[in-house]
Amino acid sequence: MLTPAAIADGQGRFTLDEIEVAAPLAGEVLVEMKAAGICHTDHASLSWKRPLVMGHEGAGMILEVGEDVTAVRPGERVVLNWAIPCGACFQCQRGQAVLCESSRPAHVMSPSAGHAHTAGTIWRGQPIDRSFNLGTLSGLALVRAEAVTPIPDAVPFTSACIVGCGVMTGFGSAVNVAKVLRAVPSW
Image (cartoon, rainbow, N blue to C red; front, side, top):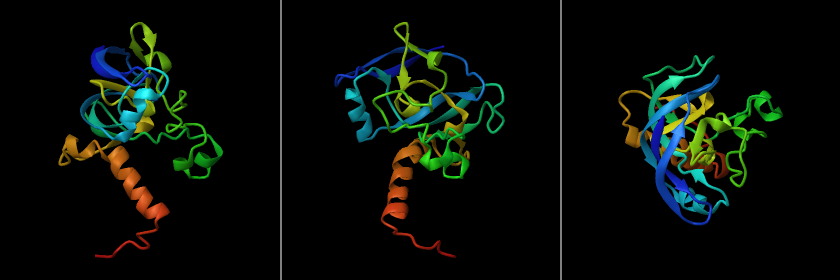
């Protein structure tokens, strides 16, 4: 399927162009993007030395699921999350998927194990990576099933789209690094 996307050229600029997005393979989902956030990392991605579909904050509707995907279904509303665990490394096996050693989404200068199949997104006849394995600044995003989390109908896509990065990063910094919240209040 053809869809519009913001493409970083790796040299400080971006263009709006069409990409071709394939149907999901096993363990993958195809998401129709409804809203995307933009943060300073998107500006930085313009110079990551290679072309890529921009965007790592987003929310949308699942259009199609690949074989073996049972946690979500077509028509479900989801937020995308760039912290996609591999499920097999030491950290994932010990229950610390947030420390995954294989799926390095923040190691942005080279492809990550967190991507959906490589030929799933094509630009100008060649496979193109998606920023932080997502590429939310496009009409469609092909991602691994682990990258999506269902959201309630009451949550607007425009509010949900920043949860996968801005909220996650801010909350994690306050709680895990600054130790601001020491106990959960029992209201």
